[in-house]
Length: 568
Image 1 (tube, rainbow, N blue to C red):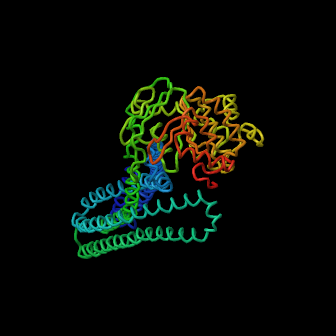
Image 2 (cartoon, helix red, strand yellow; image 1 turned 30 degrees about the vertical axis):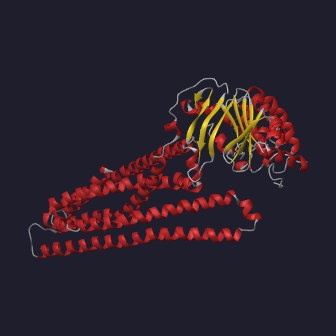
């Protein structure tokens, strides 16, 4: 960049010299023609050199910009991978996507263009001032008396533009979230014939983004003409003042000097021209950087992972006076205490909202208890290495999420180095192997986005296979047979009974047939443990459990809601 600009600064000096020392003598001295050719060739050479330097300069700036963006995007994605579950309870997916994509893109634009522009504005302003002072200090000072005016205009508009850009980014995130939510729930939209209503809502958010964008554009449209007007007034002042000095025959002013000054003014026009664009670019990048920094500055699980304990897991689990609540709720779990022996199968049962899913979410430390303590093998959970702890657990969550890749990759997701034999055995245990083989591409078949190409029961069986492949000592099943038909559920229950025999298992279930797999059942009600005993003993001592059992027996179907008897 320095080489490009230094060469450019030499051009007015060559113009001045040729104008004052070559052109006046061309008629009287033929040797001056060779001088003209020499200086013409020198100008051509400097132009070629400037072009070559510009080529490398542009490539290097883009390399820097793309490299910076790659690093920021990696850091941002890494942070998102390690943020704890409470963050995602309130975060909007579309807004996070906007930060990883469009916000990072704005920073890339600044490093690819903005840094170069800002440095060149400073370099050109200082260097050209030096050349101008050397040629005619009076004219130079007249030019630079306009600089404070330009500076105050830029500061004034920059402050306003920063606020406008922040507003635009917030609305961009809102619109992205709306689009993402709409696409995830497109079947519900179609089922309820809400397409037109969704279009109205989208148009409302889209129009708000347009208005926010026009607010930024309006500020740019006001600042740019003012800068151009200031530049034009400066040129006019120089032309009149310099021209009057030439007419009056002032020795310090020649035609070559005036033409050189006008050339330098043309060079100065570049900083003034890009100053508005650069200010806008900087405002956009600053707003994007603040949004990205909001994520990068959050405390993640690596900072909370203060434990270093690693050892083979036996599976003894104990809750001691555990209380837990979400930020927006009170007392989800209250004074929960129980212990589980290694290899024991324990089910958790209760009404919707009783705290079942919250209870099992505390074991892999998705959330931390408000008070109390949880121990695994007599070691507090907070003392275990978090990544090690989770890698030794198997979990099948209520929502059977699948990635947009092959069935093979989805099953092996938690154990990428698993052999084909191990993968097939896990699929057989989950009663999904025969279905996979019936597909045209077998285990290489793609499941589609979020597994939408499969039924709910098929997704759930794949999730079970994924958990079983890890052969964990601690297995957590969150209502994992809820989407299965009764026949498939019975087949999986037979296999689960064998698999659970050598590992500690926690099962959340609403169906009595699944609860009976457990050695003991925790009966939760309003966040408290009312009873913890076997199926037979709970039938005798708990009216709530007995009512659920009788309801399911009456309907003769495990596809009914286990508490109310209403069809699901």
